[in-house]
Image (cartoon, rainbow, N blue to C red; front, side):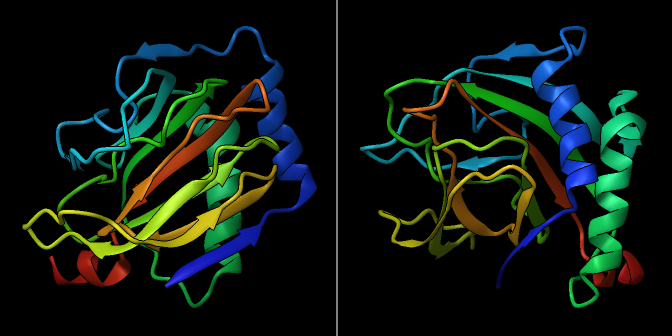
Amino acid sequence: MIKVGYVPEKISDWIYEILMRDNTFPWFYQEFTSKYNGNAEVLQLPGYEEHPYFAHIISTDNQIQSNAYDILFKDLWQWVVSNEPDMDFGELIRVRAAKVMKDFVPPTQPHVDSPLPHYVMIYYVNDSDGPTHIYKETYDGTPPERVTPKQYIDPEKGKYVIFDGLQYHSGSAPRKHKDRTILNINYYGQSRVLSS
């Protein structure tokens, strides 16, 4: 299941203003794109590499870490949850803003953000290149020797993609645009929350 959608311009314009034009919004340098938390399962395959980026953690373990939650994330999340009735939304695991600068590097190592069953939503803040690569292989505890592309999602302002968090995926740096800015949201499905 890979779901692609778009939010209304009112929401996308507001998020864009904050994350692309507000020079007081704090960004923090991170050395590795896929290893931003201790739970990620990152493959080490030839033809992929980690590269630096800038991050802002908004929420972890369903706990708000930044006022960006109320300023830019809450309306986005409420809109998506209320307009995607067939999707399984539960407790937030992690929400982060991520900004990758223009660079001529391969995609990041294929990875899953957590080895536990969950969902990933990537929201694209700006028009850019540097697609998200979603692979056919899923995490089952045994790392695959290679990955096979299933779908590429091109960044477009206001677009989001939701997919099974156990599907390996990679991000990539833009080569034509100055940056690629996203919100990366990991969350549990409602069924997991109800059974806990």
